[in-house]
Length: 175
Length: 141
Image (cartoon, rainbow over all chains, first blue to last red; front, side):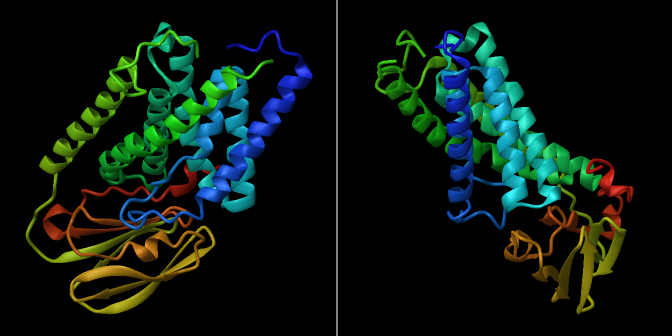
């Protein structure tokens, strides 16, 4: 479902709409308190990733990359701090790399948005913790990775199911 | 996605999805095991080790007290009492550090990402298991 045939304006409008959705999802997610937030730093639902996955599957991977980058920067400016920006970028870059591998490889036909979402979530957590290692000069913080990876599977599956349903619904809409 | 992807049974999962999930869980398991072996368990006096943009500071856990730590424009108020250390208050946006509770064993940690502050516990025998080079903001740029 590549969009090469779509006009530039339509694609831009879709990207912009998805960016708005991503920012909104990011904002809404901040209102949902997670029970383990104190014990495990960096645990999050990752709802904004739904928009990125939608973009990657429905539009294109480069669009998804631009979407993710914009979302992270704007979200950090609006809701976060400069420090959190670098950690988010590290996580986002890792997630995009994994997503690109999935989208562009022959594996694409064997992986649904659920698997892609879990992979993105896991990569995001790994990337973010690795950045934290550099910042703190210590590998101790990696001790949180196993717990974060498990949460990536759980929350990634949830966001993946949501993304999958939207993609299925979008596919049945007449263009 | 075309409709040609094979799913497992009645679930919306594909074989590839299941493999990814298993891979991530396996990685989590392997890392857990590796960390369990590396768990410090030395005897001796315990210290709270605070790593901040200003450097590394060690505070003995057997002396009750309160001190502040600064990082990236944020100030954390850290308290030591009854052999444990915890963050009393913080002006960082998330306040995850405050809700992290008390730590008292080596291997436990409290982290404040916005302030770039990390608090761990070390025993004299394991001193040096947490390395800090003081150049905290090399990545932030």
